[in-house]
Length: 229
Picture 1 (cartoon, rainbow, N blue to C red):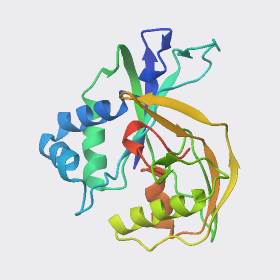
Picture 2: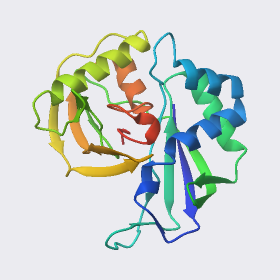
Picture 3: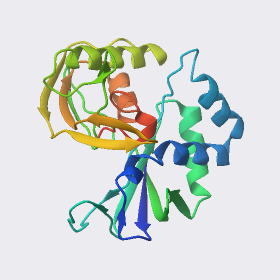
Picture 4: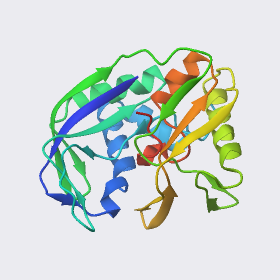
């Protein structure tokens, strides 16, 4: 399940380190509001015997924000997406968000104007296309990978197989990268994250496609990366 939270920022711009940096803390704060035990278990142990956390979100996305060199500008028309393919986690996200009037995103306050559950059915067919709204993070031998790099498709396929295994779903089939955006670099808690938005073609069980839309592609989905549009 996916939920779009409509927000309005109280500052004209965010520092680049605050675009993705606060995401993990915000997510756990929302979960703790609804179910502190679940939030603690997810943080400490992961899910279903795996260290991974089946949950994702975006950095704040602002429509109509003016372009300004060196800063991430905001607007009164923003949104932050949250999601999880696990009903227990998804329910806690909705409950936690419903009790809030704002999200403390680093030094910024994002006033919540409302939220909407996304109940659209995933694309049907033997092969579907998925595009991301935030950069996909992948690594090989401690090196960040970009589309076109050796091992990129291999590591993305492994990531998706692992997510299918965590959810006890059939492993995906063929995977192709159709399009990629420019390299993006963000600082997260003092360390860089390097990736790019992508559009991929994927052969997979519709249940896995639906799960990925609520979780994301690649690593660091808790930091707002890899969210599927």
